[in-house]
Length: 179
Image 1 (cartoon, rainbow, N blue to C red):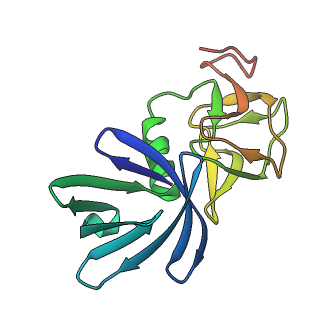
Image 2 (image 1 turned 60 degrees about the vertical axis):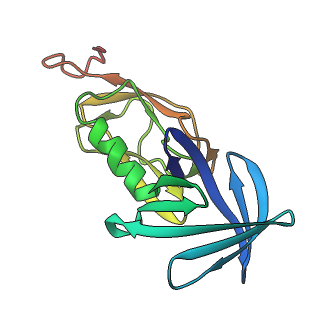
């Protein structure tokens, strides 16, 4: 998932959790911490022998927090797989790119198309699993599958191009003309 802290965007993954012991990867760097949450929104984190305390105030259904630490306050937005997919889907409504890229790290679960297939707007081109949730990535314009750059079962990175497309213009009868 992505976590936005002011202008900073961090890619955060839960690696392991046993009781209060948590292993997380932040931008690919592994951290082992002890985390204790209280009912009043206080959070105590122990990392490398140092203690950090924060007050958390939740808003907007638990996806946004105000974090208060000593003399600093931060606004933190959690962008999970579903929110990221919906944001990508909304931003792509204006114009289909000539490729489909994974918006986050994940695993290719299904590729229901092959090179040369013609897709209509709304057809699924690839299914990705991230954080135990599957997302269907659909095209929003008529197109042809030009190239498939991954296989089912492949691990993919954020922004990795998965499928190249030829966007069809109106009236070209599937000739594969890009706009």
